[in-house]
Image 1 (spheres, one colour):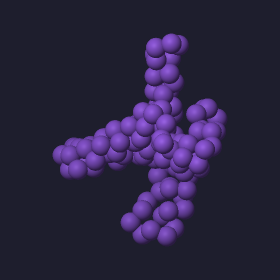
Image 2 (image 1 turned 60 degrees about the vertical axis):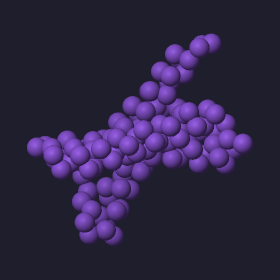
Image 3 (image 1 turned 120 degrees about the horizontal axis):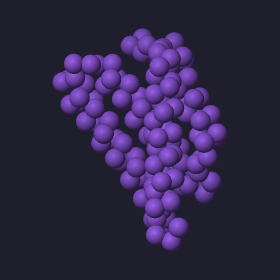
Length: 125
């Protein structure tokens, strides 16, 4: 049986981020006059989605989720660097951009801050 906190925190957050990513990709990107904003927006959302995926898998494996800033930062920066440095080496349509690493990190940190705010606002705290 899955824990309700898993569904509320990671699955729900991931679903909302995936929906926002879809809106960004299929609505904002084609309509935006500023493609740069839409592209960095996708990387921002990807950072949060990466953290949701990691923590969801950790919880399913009965491991402690990554919810402290330093380990989350290390994970997000590692993902961003891989995405922007290694991926262009094997995927010809991929281009490395150091600002994207920052966008990935900011997206994950924003989600981490949102989770902390939800914890503080939850009844009983």
